[in-house]
Length: 122
Length: 264
Image 1: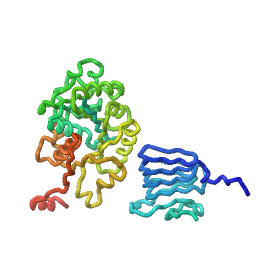
Image 2: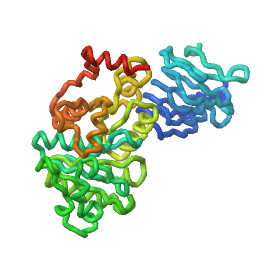
Image 3: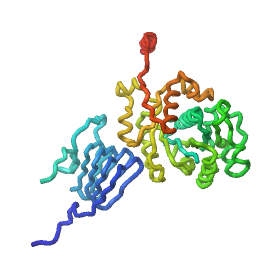
Image 4: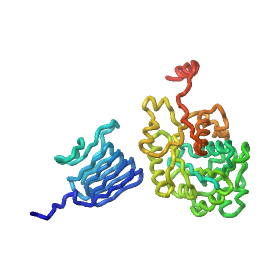
């Protein structure tokens, strides 16, 4: 039986922030970040691991900030002003509408950032 | 013991001074003993909007530095005898007072008045910190514009960090026709982001421009719709439950004709 765990992102410490993040507030964390609330425009989350927003993501997020390309960003309502994963920086298309879609996840696939419907991994 | 309420926003020009003047006057019309404090040192406006600028002899800086007794700096309103103004200084700037001096000032004013309504300057620096220093309660004013709502969100975060819990919101200058056509943020859009309790909504109206230029708060005019909105807000601050007034513009035949002729 092998007892050594691969140093994957999910083994990093995880911070649980139990409120919404308002404009001008930020979280800088070496690990994963879960927000029980919204991330408003003007708020920032920079994490070395995954970022999960159990609410509306309307601010700036940087997952995998130390270079981890497997990091993902998930939100119940996905509408960040800017999205960064590892060294990739993206933004929503100009004129993107604010219609309600179900939860979405952003990840890097084939060297570009894609946003897909959230699905629990099997 | 009175309550100290600060009227703040972050963004400039959304209606803090107008709100302070009208809510202060409306609370005095309800019989309360009110003092309005202008903390926008260097850019004072509350005295102009109240029509009291000719009566200023001493100001908040004089009072706080002991150049005069506090009572000498308070100006009694020319219409209501239970309404007072503590004006800001115009020839100084916001570093002229410290937060400790503001706290002490508010403690003294609380003993004499039912409500101390503080007009906060725009921004998040020294002026803002002074204005909130002695306050127990905050009212955040915003307009239905994206930039104003961003700044209001910032301010709410700073208020919560300063220990002023449960700020309430006034949405000012709403134009219902623009909300209906989707060109202006709705009340729900704003509350979705700011997530604080709504204190009131004030419609956009020419009456405000006239009233602030004349130095006559619009709450004194029975026919003014923003005046009605501010009177309702004052009643809510005083503990009454008042339903939100309908903001649909009432248009008779001539109103609609005028509207058609105005539109290009």
